[in-house]
Image 1 (cartoon, rainbow over the protein chains, first blue to last red):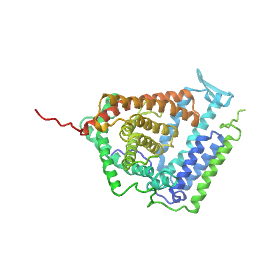
Image 2 (cartoon, rainbow over the protein chains, first blue to last red):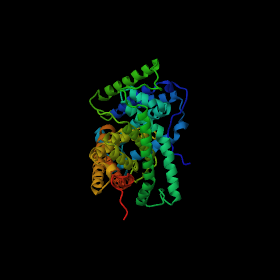
Image 3 (cartoon, rainbow over the protein chains, first blue to last red):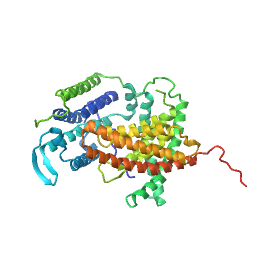
Image 4 (cartoon, rainbow over the protein chains, first blue to last red):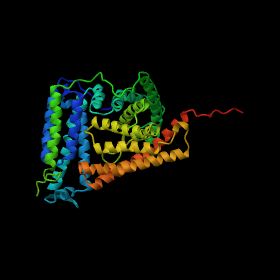
Length: 277
Length: 180
């Protein structure tokens, strides 16, 4: 069976695994916000080093996530390439100075500023990757719902998330079965057909999938209703763990990182760290 | 906020699972990081059947899961995905597909999805990309336009066909005819 490369929970013994889902969620969100806000090279370098350090602590091996890292690399490479193709002088405008290194052809010169801009943009994305991967790889999926609920999200939405995680394998299997059955009848989705035919063919696979999903929604929601889901304002969680000392430390660390990040970034009134002026 | 019904909660969960699975098998286009995405057809259909909140959360949860399991989350596009569901859900709120389907409903659905995709990929995603990632305008709008057009076509063709086929399967009141 053709498996889709998906990152999932990897059980190990480490400090990162021991943290509660809530702590990891808070850290992940704070980290995402911090990396989104800043464009300051100094902050980004620190964040990058820090995220690699956490990766080491988690005892997840690079081998475990090599496929995902490859995807991320391709994504970044393409993104950089197209930014450059569309506006090779963007960095010059951003950093308000121009140091030409060499010229490729026509308007495509390579300037120090442009390279610096690319470096910053790439780091901004790269420093989130390890944290995002760790969040997925080190958090038991059954803990997602309770950790969402514990940061104030309605437990109904938390439940939706855990239903999604629970039914992804089922939907995937069903998709696979239907598409095999349709392929046996000569309906193909691969690159051999024209794009438009492929799109029409996809309906032949999607329709049974949607109908069976609607049935499933009916069954599952009836079952939940029978058990009185949603009757009370709050609910308790089987998988909820108490916050330990380390959890509090990491939560405060997350807040501190965010605060320092904002402070350093906006100290001089601009998001960008400009070494050229 | 009105409480979500049990059915909506489940629809969001299963819808997000569908979004995720389809998001993983997308067909690439010539523009980087942009795909022919069947998941938006599903999101549109679910938004029409289960309402704006369901559409919003299916996009949000589904897209976050897709991104988080392949590379870091790209928040601006996740938010745009959520907006697609929200807008389609809002415009099609009054359409009761369970009562059958006609040309007017199909047109409304398509107007809704075109508005939603144009706003999401032409405005929300590029603007957020500029604010968050400070990427050049030309690249973002080329990318947004490509994604928007691809999604409009996919949702228009696949979504409409799905909606019609779904409506056909629902037994309508008074649909039995006496045989002559």
